[in-house]
Image (cartoon, rainbow over all chains, first blue to last red):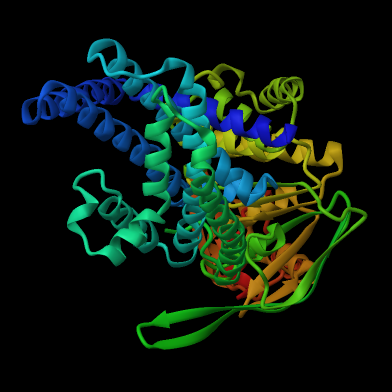
Length: 265
Length: 298
């Protein structure tokens, strides 16, 4: 564990150093966050009465923050593998005898921290600038739930990384999981418009479950016991996706070593 | 540590839409490397040198055969190639080395000591805090070698480490790396097309030819004896005599003396020396001027 953490923080430090070297990009990202928040807030306010608008705004904001967090969990591994293969650092990393899982999970360090801070910014701006009713004492639980809800996506992310190692171009897995999750999440339109069997599918998708729990977690009347059945669903999904993802990554690595294309994209 | 390659075969699957073909790259490779051995590995482009190195490194699985390390189950490899892309270009050399040091499982203290020691040996202390992207090719190559030595390797593999470097940079890398390897008795495989470079660093020579590995110490000996590898300096007055006896190429003329090489690849140095003595031609100087070993042997 100590070895893993040392490598995880080495990745984080290296990625921060690289990110800070692109100063203009950093500035644009900050401006973009402010722009998105203002856009959603004013569009929500203008289409509803003040109270409704406020809650609609809050729902969309939490939804976007969660999508950001979960999809970055899903896409980061394949993206990092692709970049490392394109840059040529993948073989150099493998040669250090660092396990592929440590490399993949550590490459998540910056993305995780960035998504974490982005959610924090969303929550604070919502609370202190736009006056959304958020219980600040629930924030640690909210974060814990967000991270917990991410675990199935980490599993899917490992599938995607295995796919990239094996087939290189075209990340079909992330693409389909992302679009179907957003479609069925109920963030952008009400699920009432859908046939009932699709609503059932939607209710059992990790994004929809995570969204419901996370939204509730920030409100004052949140009860963890009520969320328990949903948390159990996430656990089952995690138990299915994460070990399968790990197996697939090891299998893809073995195949790539057989084909001799470990360092090519 | 001893390295043994036993009956190693490698073939790759080549996919062309609906067809899959097997392309054989290496066949029946057998090789032994002892502590302190430096094997100079020659071979034409595409002969399979890099594939062989990657099989030893565990980055490519062989189709058949085995790579065995005695004394050490899971040895630490050092690997440096001519590819500078395996670094993070936007951060400094020190930050790069620190990062890879962490990946190698070194502590902060070990990393700092390692960086200082290796940078002293390679003479790169002044570029450590420069961004990697601002380095010249030679400097990048030095950092590449520094990384491969950061954690003392059990086996060092160098894949054309001096490609595209000028004479000075190349000499520096050859001399310092050789000294380090000899001092620490680290076995190494050094791939290059440059026989002169390998002649300086290696105590064993091998050649990859027609997918096979040939230990070539006997061929190397013969190669050394060939007259084509020498440049002779003679007096002006002897030039016409030489031209009558031998097929020669005049390479330069200096202070009324002439320098020549012989064209006949089959002639040995001994034969030429006997011939020159017989015809009373005085040799002012004799210098080694190696031809491409691969041209000789292939």
